[in-house]
Image 1 (cartoon, rainbow, N blue to C red):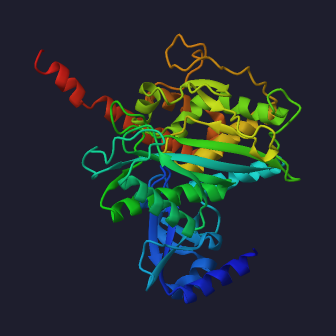
Image 2 (image 1 turned 30 degrees about the vertical axis):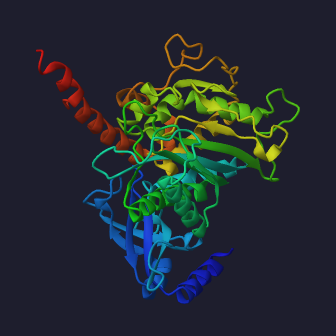
Image 3 (image 1 turned 45 degrees about the vertical axis):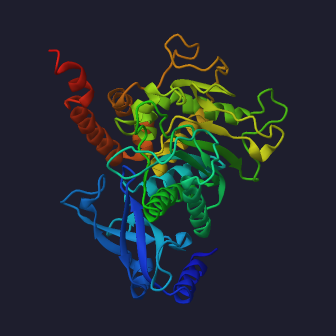
Length: 441
């Protein structure tokens, strides 16, 4: 739809749906949603000139010496928020952040992904991405008291969380976000909703919308939804499994080759090799918090080995076996990212790594189909993801590919921000230490 037609659609919807407030949505570098609202009379100014705000208050944006920035709403992302009142309704649009001279702001995560997609298009491809997102329901945000003791695919009568998932899925679909599956996950009170594949930018917007919808519906039901990567001991962490395929300029799946033993083209194999080659340095993006490595290092269901597979849970990259003769279904699944990752930066880095593999013609090693397990004696254990945030920072700091993909500004911010987080964590005395040492030393 041409830009003018999209703007006209927004105008007509505002009038027909009694919209009185429009929220501008964007994320900081760490993936936290930011928002401010304007009224419909300011819409022309917003589309033509942008909405001014102080960007020095946003993590990873500008400093106090250059605080001025502009948010330009993307009319293609306009949606009325279903959980808000339908009288004096509220709508939202995702925004692109620009500098006062009209140039894109290098530190805007949405722009970083758009830049990566432009590189993908220049190479002759478009990216199609679907996401499986896991999370927990707790009674409140002050504890990890669960709502149920179910496990994978459980269905029980009077299952409170089934209604929560139902309301969440219906809300997502009202916002134009199609859902493939929803079900109980392995952990007590852990759940998963899978989003149907879409182009990469739309999927990143959908992931951010999804997180907010899950939390809003939980609040409506008087409970709390958490996207913490590893909220409890003895229970699995929450991942964001990313399904990705490239399509060529003719609309054909560039990963599928029915005549190949693995069903994969040389493009797919080199893309996978690129992702594996850069997996360690990408960990700071795909697993960005101290807590992320509690999931990776202590959870048998989370992958740690830099290898690919058809079925081995310990490998980070999988080629699903579903519908092997269906060209459109051919894809790769990256299983290491957690649900707290910024989807814009995550997708951008995965694409950059894969395209680097294609450009250099990297060979794909053989699959690791050994039995499940995470120990150092595991056949796939030669190359592993970082064991903690400190190792992830060190690998990320030296990555020229990610410095180029994210831009100098964002790369340097993440090194500084995450180094401070790691230092604060290392100096913190935990209850685990006090419980074991205070009374005996």
